[in-house]
Image 1: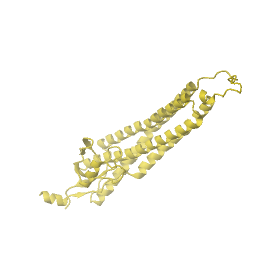
Image 2: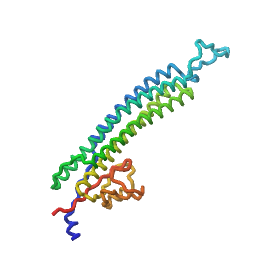
Image 3: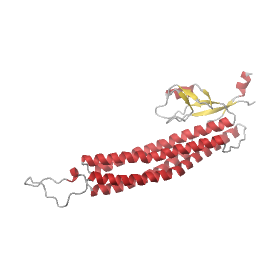
Image 4: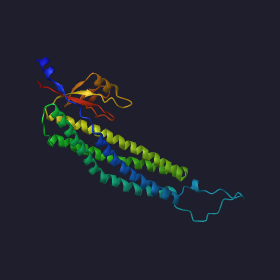
Length: 285
């Protein structure tokens, strides 16, 4: 009986995260980050020129060795002026990201769920099944959890960037550096934040696809899947590579016990994991 079942069993093609959704999500994040960066560079540069650090603005003594007489009253502390400007910019841009996060997160999560459903529906149709997916309570729970996680991540992009920029500004003022040096640090931080946003877009696309697929497969009565290693990435996880070579089976409702992390996981769930799975469907004649 077991041999007959094994002969009848088929595996479905894996559902891969959609590259178009990842690219669109990343592009929208990039637009927000670029706007924030332009604003910070403009206003911080203006404030820096108006409140140049004392070490950068100190004039050399004259030929007689005497310090030049100040022509103007002593200005406000550059550190205080830059801190006040940075605080205003922080409030402005954190609010902007906080307001944009819910709509952007909902757009991404909905698009990922719809594309995942459409792909699985097409794969099942080629295997001889016709299904119509509805937004069940469980599927909606996953959708809402995905939205909430992405709202928090989008907000954190501004929070981390602004914290790092403020630190760079204060260090620059305290060290008496010139504007060119500060501009270089702002450009560096802009690159760091863009790379983090790209990681978020890729990682969340992988994770959303994995969790949505698990719900749909369980709802269809599919209980097992086979781990498929992505074959990509410069530093693949050895345990995931082995699971792919061994065609590791696991229960979809639970996940596979990854010995490297000591817990049950799904393909695409861990950071930078691009693995997928082939659902095992028994009962074919």
